[in-house]
Length: 204
Image 1 (cartoon, rainbow, N blue to C red):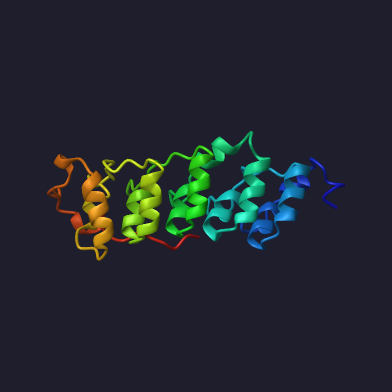
Image 2: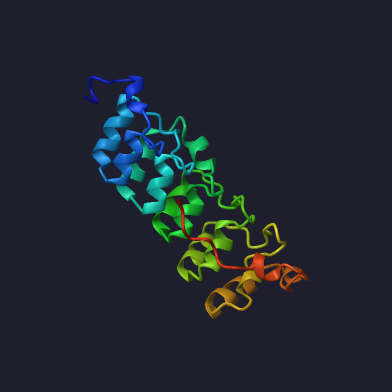
């Protein structure tokens, strides 16, 4: 049927959750089907009712095989997809970071994802999210890839500021050494608690 539907609009029909066959192939972990759909003309830019493309789904679920197939077969649209955010304000790199998929984080940055892109809810970068989630390996990974330690979220906090009151001494020490001296002091704010709360890990 896929062969007969080559470049036919049928390939991009969406269900009641606005999922296409491509979304469902990723969700059901069928990378070979993902490849067939893409080669037949399925549009990788289409989003479901949460604003996720098929690549967003692969990053959220840690589907390495589907991730590889999509990124290899969607070079023309890859920059657009990597920079697009879902309705929660997260791009592919944010989703991979939130869910702790370090190999996907590395691959996304190599493919051109902006390592310092801010999610749209509170302006956290992937490094802010890694601190929120208290994930030392992810923090080290992002730092090695060139993440900006002096980047502020919308509340005016650097990743180091988010280590205040958090358990991991390893993360605190790592970021203290790399953060600009003048940015180490916690800024005064009436909204400290709300700006420094943990990442909202659930994703629709």
